[in-house]
Length: 243
Image (cartoon, rainbow, N blue to C red):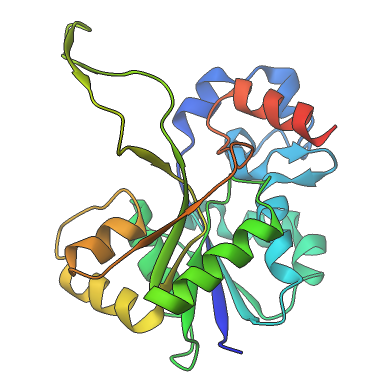
């Protein structure tokens, strides 16, 4: 069985979440109200566990996962290690590292801690706490076949392109459009090559880096429930789905 490592980027600023979150919503997270990280979405509690931990739990049951790297903001690192010592103690082969200014910088920092003997790297959003084991397995199998794979869902809404004045400039055909999710699972040698060649380019996800190499990325049908917590409404929806 090919070995796999998991990278959990949790170094974002969570600006939209913090601006949309009611105070009582933050209060169902850790109660150290003095630390600004409590308004960051991965660290809020969802049904008794922090969101970041719920996001990684399904990977912990897999025999092929031999390493987990969690990347948080440098200013949150010491606090994270102390506040979530209980959750970290339940995990095997876990390391926490300081992330960078952008997502790709954070993933690259985590990648440096992955042994080169690991074949596959799974990058999963720390704010996707409803990922299903079945989805992970489907993406793993596709990545083993083609070298890189992601879950995604077909776009069902009509898509409008809008200018800076919030006026529609175009209706975009949606026939071939899919909304990308995570985990995005890639051969380690491809991912390292992609980062080595990215220069100043800032991709929105790992698949975009692999695309730039000219490598194939397979899309696996994902689940609508694999939501990313971005706003208070997303948190409310996740709580409802968990019921």
